[in-house]
Length: 141
Image 1 (cartoon, rainbow, N blue to C red):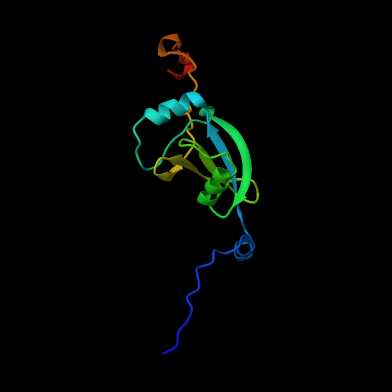
Image 2: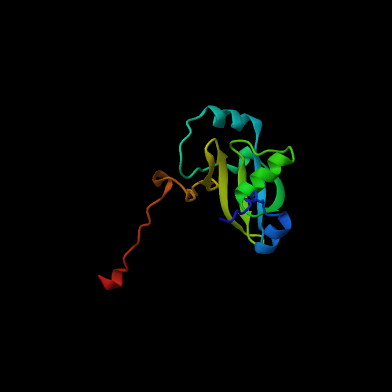
C-alpha cells in the first residue's frame, strides 16, 4: 500500500490569472449620491432590471478586472468598497458602454439608465387654428 502525501490547495497567482485571461474587462464605477442612497436603502428590494437615473450618480473611476465581482473585491480590499445602489458599467475596448449592473443587497443585478420619453412638439391648440377656405373658380362652375 503506497502512501501519497496530500498537498494543500494552492490559489493561482495573479500572474497566472493574467496569463490565462489577458483580456481584462474595463469597468466604470458610478457611485450613488447620499440622498438617493437613503431612498434606495429603505425602498422595496426587488430582483430584475433596475432603471436608475443618471442624475442620482457621480461619475467615478475606471478600473480593469476579470469580472464585476473581481472589481467589487478589489475596491473592497483597497478600502473603497462599492455600496448597495452603486453601479458598475462594462466598457468595451473602443470606449462604448456594453452594460450596467447595480449592486443590491443580494449581489449584482442588470440595470439600464432611465431615458425620459420625448414628447412631440406642440405647435398650437386646435382652437388657435384658423380654417382655410378655398374659393372656387367661377369659370369652372
